[in-house]
Amino acid sequence: MKTTQESVSKEVKILTSIPSQNQHHLAQHTMLSWKLPRQLSINQVPQVFREQGILFGYRHPRSSAADCLLSVFQMTNETLNIWTHFLPAWYFLWKLFALAYSLDVWNDTYAWPFLAYMLTCCIYPFTSSCAHTFSTMSIQARHICYFFDYGALSMYSLGSAIAYSTYVFPEEWINSTFHHCYVPIAVFNTVISTGLSCYSRLGALYLHYNSDVIERFLETKQPRLSKTLRTLAFAYPYVFDSTPLFYRLYLCTGESCMESVIPVHYKHCAFAFLTCFIFTAHLPERLAPGCFDYIGHSHQLFHVCGIIGTHFQMEAIFIDMKARHDWLLASSPLLSFSQTVGSIGISIIINLTIIAAFSLALYSRPKSSRKEKLHRH
Image (cartoon, rainbow, N blue to C red; front, side):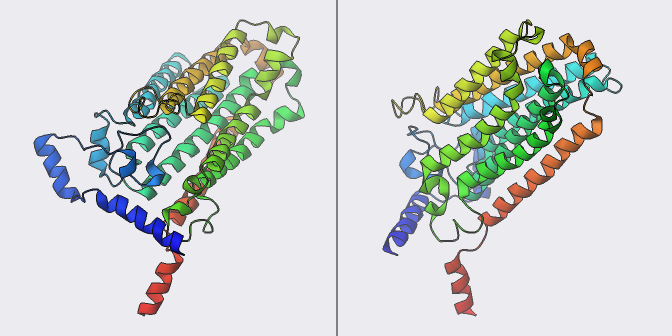
């Protein structure tokens, strides 16, 4: 009990040590003086906002929406996290519109799975950029922002599976049982991915954070377990989605493994591996805390490698789509519009339900608060 009270008082001291600000007054002051929000050190923010090896450049943990938007143009430890996904989102959107313009998308059903995949390539970096922008509005807002980030990544994994099922599958696996079950399993994987990644932040719904201390969250109580679960949540869908590709790269003996697209697929796999390694290793800031607070820390590199990997994946899928066009139309039944949109629609509904459940649980009243309310009545 003493430990719990000390934890509560510690978090209260951290939050109260930061000068409280009237949000309306602060917004007016910012508009008049154009002063950027001041930054804090790692010891001035609650545990849930701290990043390993990042000592300075933190934004106020109770920032207003205006402060968050203004910080996009200020060099903080989140600024490049925002821009390294915001700009690529527009790049992928430009590629999507360019492709839609060049193809007869209303009549060419062969291109629909690729367009669905491209849409998920636009959504996940944009959602990530928004999550990093507004994650310092409150503790609850931080968790909810990243819930949506995880959900968008899950949808990207489904988009990859839809594209791979249509254009990338090896000749030997076309129309096999695995091929027919591949996309439905990928839909199920999005549920596992989003649920497990949300669990890695909070723990079990209404069980692990029904007390008064911030450390009740799994992410702050058991950071290594949290990181492991989150890595697994996205590594598993990637490995599953890439199974047909891995077969073409390493095991196949037909013409499909001799095509010019293979080196591009290798580049995508290399950057995917590098992305995972950087995410888990926390390099280079782990070796020199404080030296990479603003530029060069692992999350920025993670973003850059992930985007480059997605670019190579997009290029490789597009090459396969064009080069294998006639053969695939003759040998493989295409995913219908209803199958493509239905898979994505079902995943969106389920993932939003998971996000809503975890988000609502954040606002559940602690046991002690309920007891106090009962005593007052």
